[in-house]
Image (cartoon, rainbow, N blue to C red; front, side, top):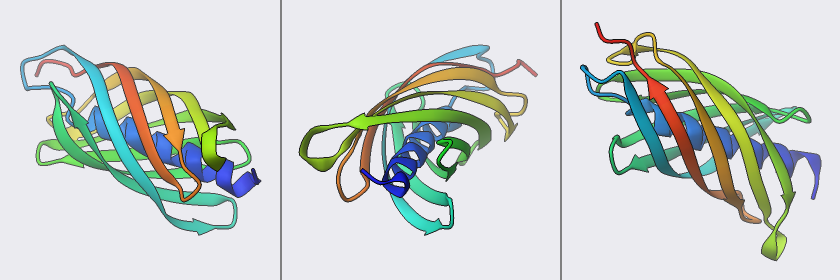
Length: 151
C-alpha cells in the first residue's frame, strides 16, 4: 500500500466523522449520541493532501454531507460537516492497516471543535472504524457524542 492510498483512506474516514457530527443536536439538547454510517470517496489529491467528500446517516441525527482534507504521511485531517441546520468543524487522525482484497482497515479519533447555526459552540469526541476498498470507497462507523450548548 502506498503513502497516498493510506492518506486518502484516512481522509475518507475523517469525512465520515464530520458528517456524523453535522446533524448533531436539536436546539434544546445538550449532548447527542453519535452512531453514524459514512460513505465517502476521494474527490481530489494534490501533493500530500487528499480531499474527500461523502454522506452521513445517523438514526438519531439524520443526514448530512462533509468535506475532509487529509494530510499525509501524518494522516491528520480537518473537516466541515453541514446540513440545513448549520455546520460542524473539527480535526482528527486516522490509522490504516492492510485489509481484505487490497483494501485497508481504518481506525481513528476526531474532535469536534466548533460550529455555526444550530451547532454553534459544538464540542465532542468521536471514534472511527471502517474500511476503504482498492478504489477509495470508504464505509465507516462513527461513534461517540457531541455536546451543543443550550442557547
